[in-house]
Amino acid sequence: HSPGGVYLSSDGVLYYVKSHPNEDHARSEALAALLYDMAGIPVAEVRLVIHQGALATASRFVPGSPILMSQFDRRRGLWGGYAMDAFLANWDVGGNIIRALPSPRWPNGALVRIDQGGALFFVSDGQSKGALFGPEVSEWESLRRIVMAFQDIGEAEMQESARRVLSITPD
Image 1 (cartoon, one colour):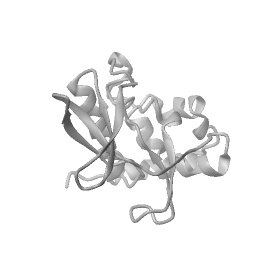
Image 2 (cartoon, rainbow, N blue to C red):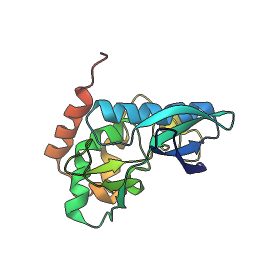
Image 3 (cartoon, helix red, strand yellow):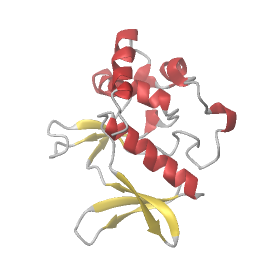
């Protein structure tokens, strides 16, 4: 994982600012968060910033508590993002979820993905996935074997989650 810390902005907003081993890793994390958001999947707001002279990510702090993946009723709330997790090859999705408190953004609370450092081209420490990430979505089946939150997901729920990915338009 990349080093980071919590900072208070001049307008009173808390951000988790994370350094990355290279600029592409920072860009990859921000892009993954944007794609989740475009598909309507709860995700921390992420922006690219310059921190200590280098490109970094700043995630708006999400008040809440981590969830236990053994709690079926809670992990079921993650299923809507299954296809995006597979499409982005987000290898860290199982351990980076916050049960957000109700807020203007999520009036009923939500299970929020807070760290996309292991999505797309990189693993969480910034190392390249190399040939393990490419044009085929190899995680479509493997995520439900590897990530406890998805072990009980059915085909119908997987297909429904795919509709969210397909809903993204270039606009």
